Length: 169
Image (cartoon, rainbow, N blue to C red):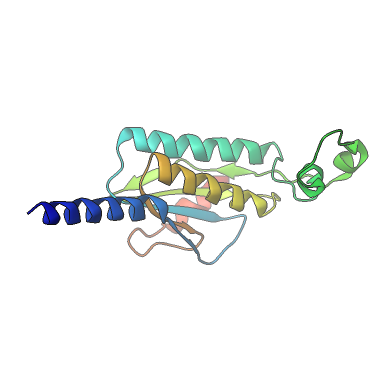
């Protein structure tokens, strides 16, 4: 009887670890100027979980809007681990092309799905690495996410074309 109890506890812990540590990342058709990002939750998200997700996406967007995802100017990253007394090249930073995100829609929810539309503008793809890293950590710590789907459409929740086209109307 005790052995059965321990096996159940082990199974519950294993499933909990798997559900929080293994958010799947999937890419579909990709257009940086008309991009839907989809989140599949483990369950219908609570208001608190929605707030965590929306604050993460808002923060990510604002950094992008300010040109923070500019791969042409990664001087600190490219220096390596030891950045003590780094000489920052202001000319290189000033001569880098602008890379701002342009626009975003409101986050929407339907059942276990969430989605948001973005125009990534000229921001570089490092922005998606940063987003995926942040979502993986959020999924481990606060919100059980099954997967993030970047681009394309979701058969369970189709995009009405006039909805997607109306962002710039």
